[in-house]
Image (cartoon, rainbow over all chains, first blue to last red; front, side, top):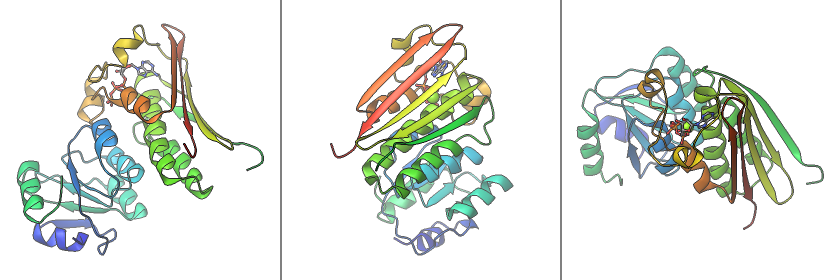
Length: 111
Length: 142
Ligand SMILES: Nc1ncnc2c1ncn2[C@@H]1O[C@H](COP(=O)(O)OP(=O)(O)OP(=O)(O)O)[C@@H](O)[C@H]1O
Ligand SMILES: [Mg+2]
């Protein structure tokens, strides 16, 4: 599914647009950076409540085009700027990681 | 490729904000050199975890990548506190990360295991009070 469609279906507030047309088929969830580094498939969406600059470093290295910040988290300025520079979409949702993942699953995104 | 390509970075200790820059640089250089994407992926994990360990555990150090005809060698060298028990440090889940680091999502105790899993050759040497030297090799076309 296209990133922009995912954002619409999740009712997300898009903080950084990134590459809205890019297709995403998989997602990963978690707040431990090395866990994500070790387990995420390239090209995945990443659902997390971590909202700081190092999240972008991991997303860039794992080529993850979509960061979904759950539970009402917002990207601080530096994270927003880095994601803009790297063409990574940052989408903010009010719902929890759990709810967000179950919604993604309903949309056919694989875990 | 005639001469090996050498990249060297001085990694600043405890600076979470620039952490990841050197590893990203290494990954981009590998891509630019046309190295297989599988190797780039593995290199990204190795370089990142080694870099972060320099930042959070070692008061900084030197991260080096040498790309030669058949392999990539990544070395991380520091003069930090060292690791008293390497076997323990290599155990998934073991961490001594500070609370501040953990709040940011570091400290899963998965960095060294991630490096080992992605390496073809892996070496780590450490002397408490003197520092740590980690070397990881990835072969091309294997
Ligand atoms: N360069 C280093 N100098 C001193 N101690 C280190 C160094 N690298 C690793 N260690 C020790 O080994 C432990 C395990 O390292 P590892 O990278 O596997 O996990 P972590 O850094 O604690 O957490 P994570 O990498 O998952 O964020 C560390 O908690 C630390 O005690
Ligand atoms: Mg680590």
